[in-house]
Image (cartoon, rainbow, N blue to C red):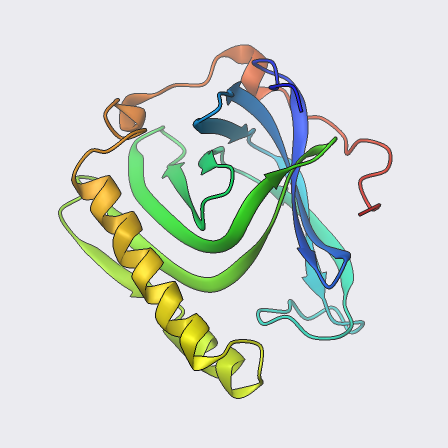
Length: 202
């Protein structure tokens, strides 16, 4: 597929068992054959999984409905197609950088609407100055393994990938050889937009 153009509006989707599990509208900062930078504008409406009673689902299950709402702050995503982790940068309302979150995911793949993937629950939190990091949501990974979603081998692989991702960010490997912490979105990137037609088709 062709690369996306800067400021182009696309979507990131989680797909679970051939059905859309979440939808995040983003604008393209840059797209290349290696790293892709995507930006979710402030006040962009996302969709994420809920039970029919309206409770947010944290661990995938057989049935869910999509619902959501706007998020007040902008988020930067650094993604590599085919890689099993992504990086998320967050700023506060004064655009002071708060730190990085590493998401362990099924390898990201391109689609006609943007990018598809599936989160694998285990995250890593990295401080703004990259001096401190810690695992996040290990309890959810254990519960998912107990439910049969992950095998013991898959869980070991998650931790190995997480350690590799931490190494990349601490050793300033691409794309961290730049200075994303001081990056600022231009006005075109900050424009919210509606979901494209066909977003629900896998």
